Length: 263
Image (cartoon, rainbow, N blue to C red):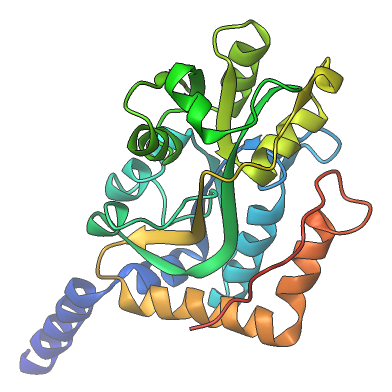
């Protein structure tokens, strides 16, 4: 009886101490929050019948490092932190910028992409940041774009939309003078937008930020596994290959890789 009670007590203690990494490995899958309207980071690929993109390839890389199956949950920008806190996802890999405010709520991995925030507008209409005071700009709810624009211009008018698809629709309908977002995402959405010839993404940077993989606070072992996956991909050249696939020669969105993943 004493032996049985000892075994039971040990089992209870193990269960109580199990962290997210243990739980993920026990169920054999990791639920990852991703976006389906933010090409080339995450979008629904009709040909494959599933999500594809830069973020998705890193999600699969992380799942491989942990040794489990990736299960993708598509989420809106405004829900990226909430799905973690509610327990609906184990990780969020959804072009999520690392900020001091967000780091109060979740933990982040190393940065795996460096993004420059810009505007998309009709050709010839936006040339200088001083114009922001007289502009109406569409932004996706839950992104850092709105706050950063407000910090630059007190008089700017912001129109929030649920996601990038709605933001670009509002831009076409004339609800705003421009739309704000990560340069790569703006170019990705613009590439498939009807009447795209009338619009451009001027080379007027607004801000820069690193995208990180988010997880619940205090999950240090999971964070270590994610960071190991990222640094190993950089050292092996896999991270650069993923970048070249989505942003290199021949890609719909072409950008130079001006960063490396490092601790």
